[in-house]
Image (cartoon, rainbow, N blue to C red; front, side, top):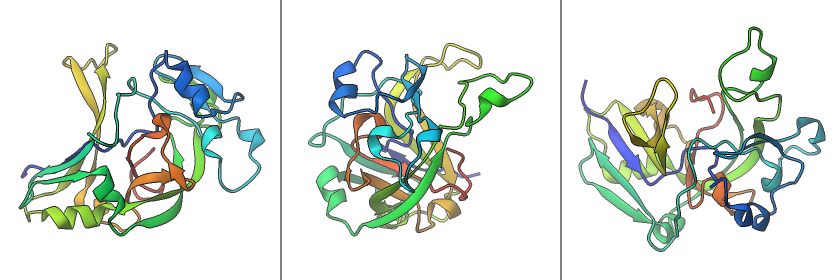
Length: 225
């Protein structure tokens, strides 16, 4: 099997936050009714019975973290596309915003949503019903970015590596500090609804939801969230 194409700089996670960054939480207006499932890293659940509208407001959207949030700013952040491509591509935040965009309404759901109700008890965060949310996402279709780099015929997967990083100390342990990463088969990555987004519900992403950009793969396209 040939090597994959790779994107780095994208934040594919459902959101990361430094556990001690109270100012960032309160400054972004995080809904005080969110249920704490884990403090380090921060994982907050939306109280599902309070759902009032088709879209969940950003400050009430659940937060799923694997590692502490990195310190990023839009002036120095870059999206890198390399690997099995004809030309390595490095894209700035401003450049990404100036590309043709698309807006989709999509539901994100943690793969562990409802885990608290399993019998026997399963390993992992004990989510009830609220590790799920529907929001409006605006960004650049991933397919356009891949086309710009020129994916080689040998490529079969696209690996997305986030800026968030840490060490997994539980089994299976990581070999030291690693970046959070996920992958998609190339055919799915090229579907038009897969976006590298910079707006959530019409406003720039907050740190806990992937600032400055994140990957959104709508539910039903083969990538559990």
